[in-house]
Length: 162
Image (cartoon, rainbow, N blue to C red; front, side, top):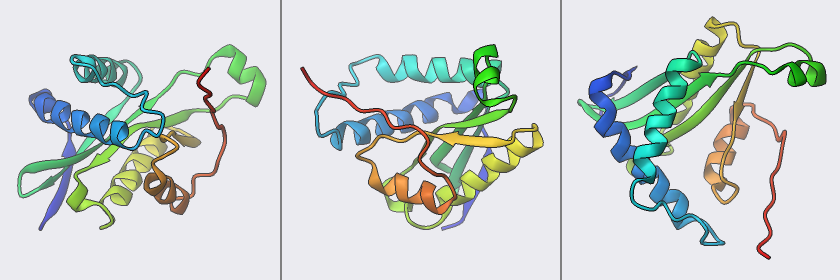
């Protein structure tokens, strides 16, 4: 196994879509409330919106490959800060990891951590002073990785079926 990393290009869209579908299926499989549907067409819309945000907000997509096969990705964007947010917490530049995914057999080998480091370096090169990542609460393994990487709880959303 020789994992390498490279930037996304338009020719990679189908591979990104296929991996995004796997990410969605994983989320659906661990959803204790069974609310995630991922109906036909969802992944295509999600990837298109993400690609638009990457272009609009100084984003970057990095792909992980094993002998030419794309096995994972990380997507980051640098959001524009609202006036309200500037007044609330002061001026800053925030980079957000929108998605991070690795094929099952490649997890736990430090590949995700390498991608996080590469994205953090990108954010720093763009002047970011903080980095955000959100994760689905039932995804405890991802949460552990992010905590090891230095992320701390900042916001928690809760849901109740009524």
